[in-house]
Length: 320
Image (cartoon, rainbow, N blue to C red; front, top):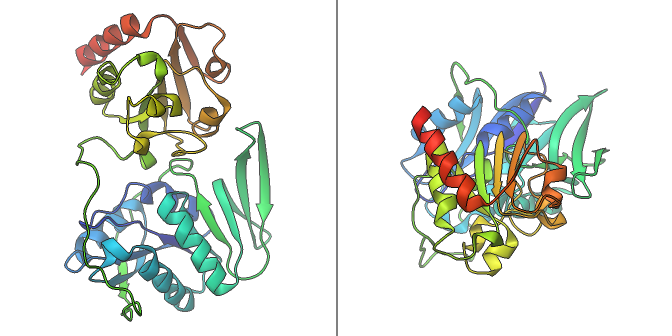
């Protein structure tokens, strides 16, 4: 069976980001997923177990002291080494800030081509074909690449996870230190949260400018917590200071494709729709019956979110 390299994004504390599940699922449609991970020292076994749970039966791992700080440099080095070991038909990475940087650097180094923001991958007569949702979801197109190993960035959550592997074979690779690069200080921006990571969450609750204030945006947090969902925001809400930029969903923020996307007071500008249109089920609550988001919503609730959402939270918590 053909092999596909899958880059696992690993946080500075050794936690594998949730995007790995859908990435392994995407790679599994083409061949045998081989996970690639740069690990902080002492986290090899825990990372290997997480990769096995995501569905990978083989992994290529390198322990790097400054892995959480240098990020893309050792990842590109490890991918290049893994290509020699595995000879894959494609390299799959997340369509995230980190993943896009790694994809571009790796492709430039290996003279390969990149297909970005994929929502699906397939093998057609031996060639890798990539499916994209473009122009704000108005068109679905397929593309192929020529030359080198195809590098595909996959939209987080766009593809279904696969079952856990029975076991995982881990091959360790030693990487040379990056010349001239040394980490002198590293600090995590933002506080920790028990909520799912927005990039790979199965459920997302997003709030818009209609929330009216930073204090009232807490209604989004309450609903998200009752559902066990990640929190998102429209650009208008971020620009108004209701939520941090890291929570922005849209063309200039994070692109998501959860099983459930619930929007509160978001009218549906084209830039926002482009970032969440491929969600499996979309529920929208807005007082404007002509809000553009209702055109793509599976369930549209026309009403005052300050009356609807508290009742929804009560109903959800009553069923828990």
